[in-house]
Amino acid sequence: MKQSTRNLWLQTITGIMILILMMWQMRQPRIQELDSGYRITMGTFARVLVVASDKKTAEQCVKAAFETFDRVNAMMSDYDPNSLLSEVNRRAFAEPVKVDAALFEVLTAAVKYSRLSDGAFDITVGPVVQLWRKANQTGIAPEPQALTQAHQKVGYRHLLLDEDNQTVRFAVEGMLLDLGGIAKGYAIDKAIEVMRQQGALGGMVDIGGDLACFDRPVGGQPHWYIGLQDPDEEQRYLLRLKLNNHAAATSGDYRRFAVINDLKYSHIVNPASTQAADSLSSVTIIAPSAIQADALATAVSVLGPEKGMALIESIDQTVALLILSARPIKLQKTTGAANFIAD
Ligand code: ADP
Ligand code: MG
Image 1 (tube, protein in one colour):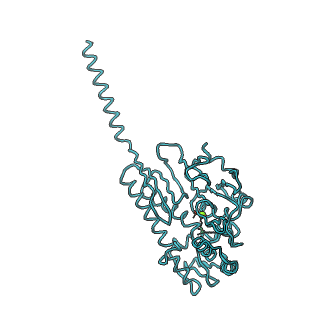
Image 2 (cartoon, helix red, strand yellow):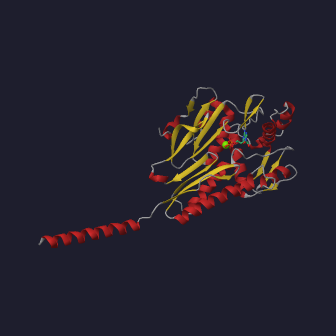
Image 3 (tube, helix red, strand yellow):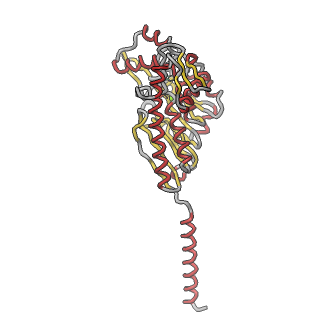
């Protein structure tokens, strides 16, 4: 064969190969990643990351997730007088109040975590939380007598849930439910459910630092990575956690607290003592669902390091990373936690 004919053959074969490669690449689903950025919802900032095979699906997922947050907030906020929760708080002592399936589900889960934590987590802590919220605004600590009175209205055993009729009733007058320690977790789980339904290949949902992720991570990475924040410095991370299909929630006295008479009061209250929980600086729980991580992070903040560690060790597939109140910073973790530490 002449040199020129050989060259022509080579060029043709190369051309065909390139064409085949291009066609093969076009057949591969192109991966779209979408970052919603931070948006205000549920009294804090939320962010959604989506991995999808096309842009439209990714956009639909973000939209559906934020609609979920707004819906949960409109139903479960105790700040909003028009929420279903506020209606329950007004009427449930007088008569059983029929509620939406979503609210009933959260109330049922809340009672489960109350039992599990021996009352450390308790959504009936509302009357006490109200007093501390007011103290936070005025800078004047609640009167001990007011705390004692509020305490009489606290107790998850006084919350009567009728599963057959989907109704809620209060056994004690003046009870108030506060879902601040569990509603974000519920909203995160629901958002992930709708993103899966919309066809996302993977995603992460973050509401105020509580988050969950599923399936395919962004950037072709092997895991979803999140930073464990330094409680003393907002922009610093103590370590990196790697997650796959997990949720992580952090409760702490460092993000929201009041300074009253030079004392620091956390927004988490011990239902037994009516005092602010202050033995832990930060509690991070990693669990299969965000509702579980959220409720248990609040519970462990109340229980303190010893009882809190023991509780989490007793729960399957759930780990805790605690930062004690004392300085210098000391990290304490349950047995399985090392599996989630990236570096
Ligand atoms: P964050 O809101 O910072 O994520 P949490 O998930 O721990 O923190 O929720 C704290 C909120 O839960 C409080 O603002 C209050 O509304 C409510 N709360 C306070 N103490 C308790 C408690 N012992 N059990 C259940 N909910 C609580
Ligand atoms: Mg919580």
